[in-house]
Length: 139
Image 1 (cartoon, helix red, strand yellow):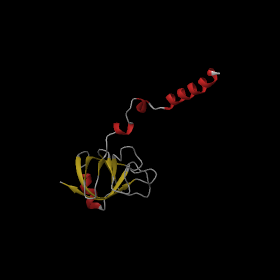
Image 2: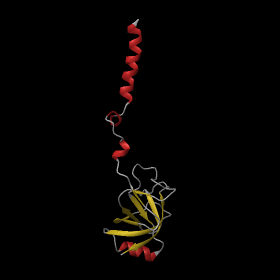
Image 3: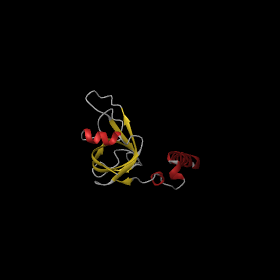
Image 4: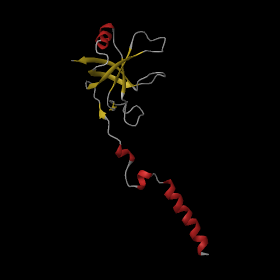
């Protein structure tokens, strides 16, 4: 009779051990191990290396620029863009030929941009995780 009572409880205990993640078993939280992303505010600086990319979209004319930075938490409501650490790649959209010329002269270099409008990338085929639509170059 005791064997019948012990077997189900042993099976449940074994299943509980198997379903526990290694991080929980060690007493650490896996979220605590991730670095917290820096919060980006409207008017804040975004610094990183500027690169140019080719757009495969036929509707897009002109160059596509990208800035790679540390992970950032975007201003609400965007937040982390459904990513663990927030976006690291930012598509920089020039407002006209003058801004495109500014970016072209800084390709491959570290730049700082004052960001006035940024959002998570939503269109299929975008290379970047976030899109900066209003910005100014900080010298």
